[in-house]
Amino acid sequence: MTLRMEYDGGSRHAAGLFSPATAMHRPSDGHALLAPVLVLNASYEPINVCAARRALVLVLKGVAMTEEENGHFLHSARVAMRLPSVIRLLEYRRIPHQSRALSRKNILLRDRNTCQYCATVLSSSELTLDHVVPRSRGGSSTWENLVACCHACNRRKGNQHPAEAGMKLMREPRAFNLHTSRHIMRLMGRSDDKWRKYLFY
Image (cartoon, rainbow, N blue to C red):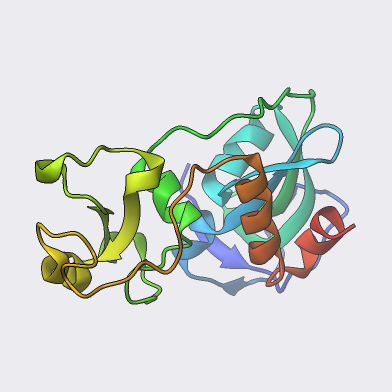
């Protein structure tokens, strides 16, 4: 089945996730599959953010249902599958109050894709991870010693401590816990009206 990305201006159809392929829609770019989607627990508690591609898979598998749509959809010869903006899990999931897994993705998410030395916001591909205390000088790969960093600042800092390079961190790096996750969700939600009623209450 061949699919292509299209956009319908954000209107909702009674058919929900699927709509007739004969409907008239304007084309959109393929980046819609990477758009952030708010994930709610069965209790409507916001618990995560994922890409629209992953959210659509969860809906199609019957693990979640769409609460809000983002106006984009995948169009095939027979049906148009609408992409969600907010999804809700059908079964309640217990979320442990502990830090997320240490990974490049989560470090960049915690630091909001912002270089922690020059405050430049960049795409993930334009950022790297910097060890505040270099590994060659005893620095470890931990939440408290890893930060998002642009390539220019990374080259400037080199094998030095920030103070030695005349650089200063924007903020002290900390573990990415549930409180941090919700704070970032609220920041992201300010640019999406459909998230507001789930995040600001």
